[in-house]
Image 1 (tube, rainbow, N blue to C red):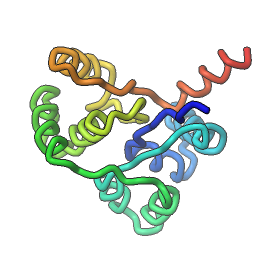
Image 2 (spheres, rainbow, N blue to C red):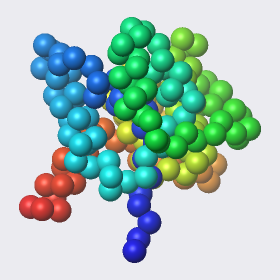
Image 3 (tube, one colour):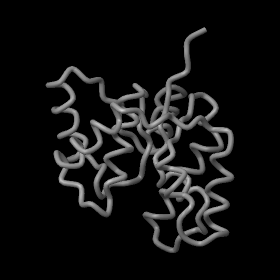
Length: 164
């Protein structure tokens, strides 16, 4: 039996899953995609979060925060190691992430240091294709494996390919 692939769940995923349905069609599509992943795909993978995800999920409306935290119950929280603490500021500077969003650099660092297969996100502000491309080049130059940056749509496409 093969080992399950690992996914680091970034904060936007529980946020989209538990939020009220949006009237914005793109946001609603993302919510539905995230919910589909959670309901249909997540058990096929090892899911991980971090203290940074928990801290972000605790913010805002108390009822909404409780929904997000409840969704994450039972998931393993990856530790913030000295290597994460060394790498996150490097990523923050490299990707020019503003101080107010520095946690995004920690999401990247945790997923990288703990060698996850995927980093699942809907955060394109600082974790999009351009940032990922820069991160990938840096990591390759330093001999560091980089998890594949994916959205929940990835699993819909994968399922379609597998079941044709």
